[in-house]
Image 1 (spheres, rainbow, N blue to C red):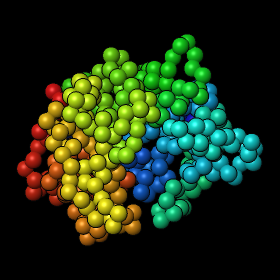
Image 2 (cartoon, one colour):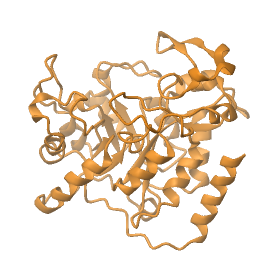
Image 3 (cartoon, helix red, strand yellow):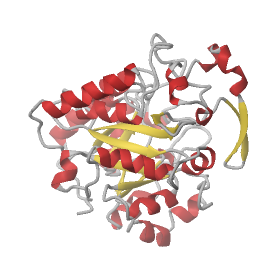
Length: 366
């Protein structure tokens, strides 16, 4: 396959060239490119990841899911409907299915019902109509290994980290038939280890190949705890129940559970609203104590998702200025990194922050 040959060429080029790279920075809030520079290009596309690196991202972020034949790809949704042209492929019309996802019937074209070769015949489209549509129908779904190759052969003078989510592992493990008694988590981890992503947070080895493993499913992170030293992040969403352990949001953020999970993970990735809730009139409510609770346990906090566009319902308190939102989270609340659809906008903010802020990342899990 052409895409496999391209991957091999990229990796060989990366292993042979001796490009000088500056040390990975850990003294500033991390710029985490959410699905790449997804404000400009279709999310989780090669162009979105390459642009994010150009714009100054410390990490490129990907959701990792699986195909029918057990290959791992970068794709956020369980279904293909919203961000691919699958509806333009009559040969796949019979693939539409209804499955139960977290107790709800979901109908669509599920990625787990397609082989990698079939998925490579599809093309990505932009999720949001207010964003650039000119790349629709031009870009393929990348594999996990193609994503890693982008970070490894980056032309950037600083090292680029990868921030990868084990996406919907309960659903994937139910629908994909793995061989040799393996699970989704095992296949995911084997690929990371293949490229030497297996170091404890902030060690010399980690700084050489920075990585975070993230999941909404605590059991996946616990399963991986004794299998890899790579740092893990527990994702948190308000008003939700975990797919695997059936824990409520209130249980996940309780003091007792944070005490427990802090032995497994180095940080949490909460929705912004878990920190700075918004009322029905799009006005900010008083901030919660979640950041303080996490920091008290030595946990980092990487909230999601920040957008540069004003028309994506930026709370009115920021006066239509996305930089005010960055400033509240970074300077006032002292989060340790942000997931953003627009890494260039956060890098612009961070350039000013470097000049005026004396804060250095005080919450490290050494």
